[in-house]
Image (cartoon, rainbow, N blue to C red; front, side, top):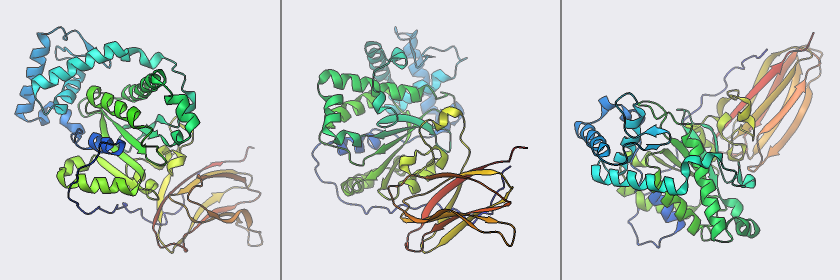
Length: 421
């Protein structure tokens, strides 16, 4: 039986520092510049309820009907994309959602939208994208590391994580990108990962119709990955319109922030809301704003370990904050004799002291030191431990941040297995 501990602190929404505006400067086309363009210039802002026909402007509804009329007069009327027919008698509102994505990608220009849709269907046919989910492309070593789907955000959008830091290893780089054929296979695998995410979408007005992209820039070899990354971005922009609700870049280097400050003054507020950056040390604080800790991978400051989600929905974690100069004791009471308690706990950025002890209810009982107080570094993963009690009492988890002035986000959860009779 589980007892709920008394809340200690009220979580506060983290605030990221806003970079000061800077005048634009001519930039050489680079990988980072391409990321900026993909996240801003070619990504109109997203709003789920805009797929409700009643919420569309009259001009938008007219463009949608005009596109339908054009489709009915072409050989595309019998085509489908992501299993959704492009010609609908009105009984399948998923068709409207798909067509609106192409219209938004081309500012509701009907001819341009039809051209984009036509080229996308041609590409999908030549690329054999409709059957890609059934293929074994042989990249098992990259699964769960380089690009993978993991859980959802607080609004139900599937989340895709990307991290290319492993390719700083030259041997790994040559094994994956050594020649044109290897690059072709990698691009196919990367499209496969995206198609997995799309298969989770509802394509319903007011439903979940897009994914979240989280890209880790730590240790990313920008020069070496320029060709591959530009091809990936081009494929996604041309063939997967309006399928990303938010793009979150984490562990961003200083020059990325500078680039953002140059682009930022020219972006609308709605577009800025779709683009999020988090410097190193602020990753968990940023991700927790959008994704619950139990869905954030452990390497990014969350509680989700490989394989956890395959067992079903994870147990929700309790979130709290630790202020600078503060020590927090989490007390889990009501533990019976012989019960086993298992807990997970993580603090974003760590760099503080942590300890765990069991305190018996009996006045003459001895406190048991389960985990002696020790320093947890920023690179350490979440604590996962368990203890079987010998007498009734409570568990005390200690988080000591007195050596820091910085406020930190944190999360924990626990399970209590009652003793068998």
